[in-house]
Image (cartoon, rainbow over all chains, first blue to last red; front, side, top):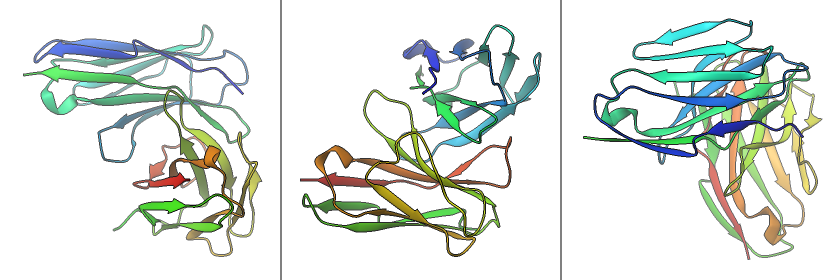
Length: 111
Length: 112
């Protein structure tokens, strides 16, 4: 069992604020790092999968970075909108085809 | 394009009863997975399959069995349900390793 930690657990921001969350994972046996967005009453939806140290991915106002040597990834949201309200999950993938999920960061964007 | 479909969406079982959860995907994905979601915990892998006819144990396999007789279907069975198996179950699939998973909408199971 591998420990994947996300912080903060929850976050409230005003519309228009930029924000970021952290995912910490073991620095050994790394295969990939996933980020998912999970809206209430829906299924988790894949945002990014990163495999190389130093990877940066971007989708609209959301971006992510990866540091495999120190075992962390950041997710950034620029200019938060109410529709960004969701739980953001990260998951650490080992070479053994196993994905270990964190408990998520619950984001609420206040209009 | 339906993606990943799980049936049923809700179910209440009595302790000792058996049931099968069905996961179907129409994306021709090789890999399929069953996860459970419990309060305060991340999604935990129960079993997975890397192709038709194959299955493997995940992090929390005890009390569950699976079968992948057809590429598009992945079945999760509970032979003798226990209250500890009360959970929300998610099925997911992926084309290969290293790409994002597509999740189903979940099955909420209560064992009384």
